Image (cartoon, rainbow, N blue to C red; front, side):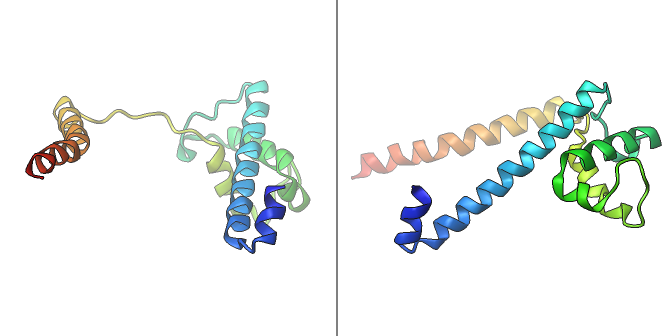
Length: 133
């Protein structure tokens, strides 16, 4: 219904935005399916690409190929391909690197102060200029 109205009103930008949203939701769903399959097989994907063993890479690669319809037409699960380099970004998309809290206490305090200043300064300026009027 919304798409029909957007088309009738010649609001093609809304149709384009809806298309982009649909593509993004589909990509998120595909990644979610692959991660569920990896969870069922007890495969750890909470690491960086460099930390993957060859066995983990192939298990994650096979899950990506099995859950992505476009990739399953192009690649065979369990078999190496001459275009293997095309799968690496998809495998990296599945991985969730371990969180690294490298901020010191000093940098955390600075970050919080800048954050508070960013939210309080517009309010303070509003009060200042409100009194002048």
